[in-house]
Amino acid sequence: MKQTIWKLENPIKHFDWGSMDQITKILGISNPSQKPMAEIWMGAHPIGCSTAIEIDNHKVKLDKLINDNPQAILGEDTYKKFAGLPYLFKILSANKALSIQVHPTKTAAKCGFEKENQLGIALNDPKRNYKDPNHKPELIYALTPFKAMRSFRPIDEILMLFAKVNVSILENEILKLKNNCTPQQLKLFFTALLNLSEKEKLQLINQLLNSINDIEIEPFSTIKMLAQEYPNDIGIFMPLILNVIELQPGQAMFLDAQTPHAYIKGTGLEVMANSDNVLRAGLTHKHIDIQQLVNNTSFDSLSLNNLLIKPIIKANKTSFPVPVDDFNFEIIYSNDQQQEQKVTSAQIVLCLEGKICLTTEFESVVLSKGESAFIAYQAKAYCYTGKGILATVSN
Image (tube, rainbow, N blue to C red):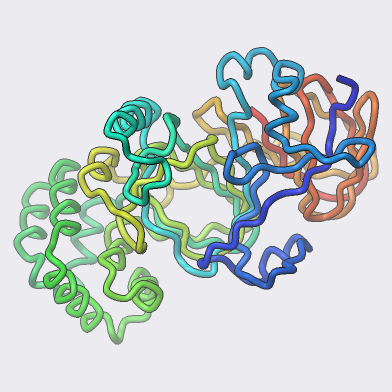
């Protein structure tokens, strides 16, 4: 295999929560369909596979390219452990909140996937919970101010916020939590909220919105916004229960299995294990399996100042360490001086700013803002030159 670097063409996902123009404004990627441009996928996922452009301009799907030369492209260690590209890299732009969700552990995903297969539930059945046997840890890196919810607030903070609103239907559950400030009681409180009847949910939502009508501070302003986007959805209570955070450009957050979260608004880069397992809690019209959701959720609390990844800065590179083997994420600041980057596994490189030339032993590609490339393990290293910024994902 002589070629070791390929420019990529990447599929666009037009989900209705996406922004019409933010990806175009920030990265110069055109939106010819004029539909909401929610995500651009870079990787070999079966429902959104990138296309690699060969030297002779012949195009080949990235999954086929990998399958034809798996050890040369992935490296022996990655091939043995994952049998394919273990990550999916996305550009994500939310103009409307995504569903509140958790992802299962690898063990739970394997068990759930096998059980639903045995029950004969089709992979495309909207009530299917487990689409594959893998976990789905994620990293989000902000390109713009990026608002999100994640992890349970400290319980005393939850109680303080509920004390500011008049929600009499929850009075007994709030009292139980006040008398027993433990993760187990928080689990019971959360479960009781989701299991209310439709009539009770509507009454509760009306009580909440009437209580905060004249309050403009967080998290009440977020509740009002969510109520406009998802009227009559119990998920609008989650800003009282989960931390509301706004990442600033250049900040990143890691979301491990069992972490409740929702992206609310903003544009960023998302990296995840190659999985599609999602268990939802609200802000959605899709299937919600409350029992599976609760079984796969961690009810430990985190304070707001513990939500971001602490970056490691070395020379012109900023890395964001994560506790999984599926992916690594790094930002590289390039100047006109040629520098070398080692390749220890298959790598996807996205140009965020400027124009940068990447050169391996046999060929080179030039990436302008918004363009991406795939680099095989067999390259071992590449040189980069030109003024700009690269985002790189490997494993």
